[in-house]
Structure formats: C-alpha cells, structure tokens
Image 1 (spheres, rainbow, N blue to C red):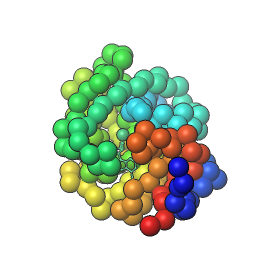
Image 2: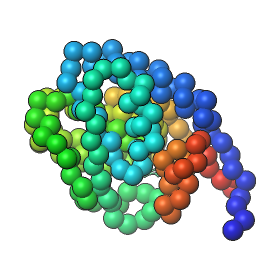
Image 3: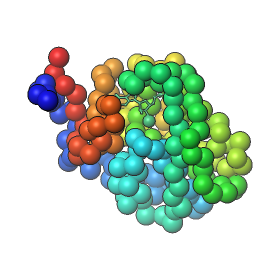
Image 4: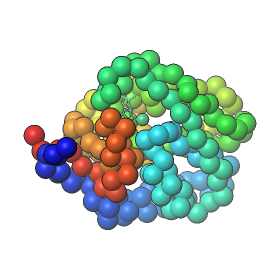
Length: 174
Ligand code: IMP
Ligand code: MG
C-alpha cells in the first residue's frame, strides 16, 4: 500500500528528553510514597516502559486493558474493562499511565475505578494531551506534550492496530 507523506511531530530525541524530565519530577514527588504504576494497554506500553526506567523510586507495575465502543479514531463514551487491575492496590499511590488524553472519558473512568479499589492516591500521566477535544473535566497530572487536534500515531498509538512500533509520533500530510 502506498502511504501518504509522514509528518513527524515528535522525534525520538524529543520524546526521550521529555520523558527524562517527567521521570525526574515523578521521582521527586513519589520519594516517600508507595508507587504503583498502572499502564493502560495497549496504547501506553511503549511510553510506560520508557517512563518507568526514568523513575528512580521503587515501583510496582501493572497493566489494565479497557475498550471503548464505536469509531476507531475517537472514544465512544462507553468504557469497558477488558482486563482489570491485577493486584490489590489498597494503600498504594497509583499513577495511571496512558498514551493520550483526548475526550478524557477513558482516563476519567479508570481514575474513578482505581479510587474505588482503595488506592491511597491516584494521579495520571500521559505522553500526549489534546485539551481541545475534552468532553470530561480532567487534566493529566503529568504530561509530556500538549498537541493540537490532529490524529497522531506511533510510539504506541495506533491506527487500525498498526503503527504502534514506529519509534516517533507522526500524522499523515493531508
Ligand atoms: P479518550 O477516552 O477520548 O480520552 O480517548 C483516549 C483513547 O483514544 C486513547 O487511549 C487512544 O487509544 C485513542 N486516541 C485518541 N486520540 C488518538 C490519536 O490521535 N491517535 C491514536 N489514538 C488516539
Ligand atoms: Mg487507548
């Protein structure tokens, strides 16, 4: 298949630099806490893998999978738990990690869910924030990049389940 020209929005180097910065902040903020990193699959697996290696406090790491019905490029409003938090997180300071906050529906749902499981504190960390698309009032506590309303792929983000393994973030030229 012939592909349209790729427009690289975030290079590997830019991503690396930002993750180091955010990792340092998390290291400071969680120095005396009981950190549990909850990575949301599948979109955040690459980001989470790089992020936890930039965080220098002891951390447990778990994965959760949600799905949202409907259109592949946007969240539908109904979030379903496909695989739940695999550990007892009572008393833990949970950091939810996702690839992107778009409408905010997924993060808002997961945050409430984790709170209901007895976490001591719950914060959120994303690679990308698209605030212009928000329909739910939620702001990530840690964010690497704020982007415009464009659909992007790479570095874990997919289109039709492909492009997750591209090491940079891009979109296609119109
Ligand atoms: P939200 O529930 O609308 O915030 O959507 C979050 C999910 O939608 C993300 O975890 C992604 O899976 C997907 N998503 C939103 N925007 C993009 C994008 O630009 N590229 C790829 N996936 C996206
Ligand atoms: Mg996702």
